[in-house]
Image 1 (cartoon, rainbow, N blue to C red):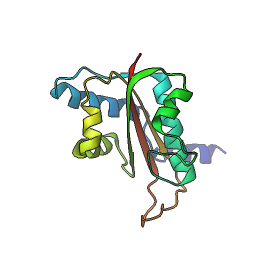
Image 2 (image 1 turned 135 degrees about the vertical axis):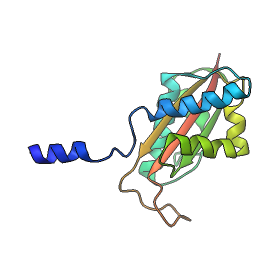
Image 3 (image 1 turned 120 degrees about the vertical axis):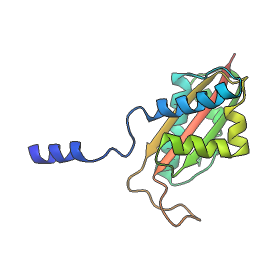
Image 4 (image 1 turned 90 degrees about the vertical axis):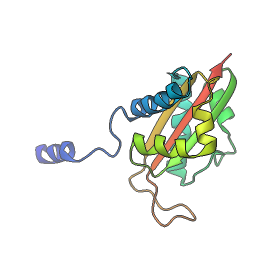
Length: 154
């Protein structure tokens, strides 16, 4: 028992603690360079992001629409968050905050969401699926599923 506990602590964590904070720091750095104010974390948006990241990981798909037909607006609403504007970024396969932020900033649509100065709050989640299977069209499992939800509260 003691040996297995010691080995568990010695193994690298698939997702480092505080990785969501690192994503937020990278996103807010890009926003500052573009003249936007920083995003604030919101627990309801984080819950919406986490539910979608978990669904993608556990149900083996990658997309903005959930297998239940939900869109980010539905997931935000389920958390009781009332908003005027909202957006969502997703990614999969990146092993670090810097990789995912870098990829989002290289994509026109994702970059537009990050640099939208009207959006004020965010929720960020990453789910690691160690026994992930490749999704259709992929040769390797993605394992890491990232979601960032953006919104402007009412």
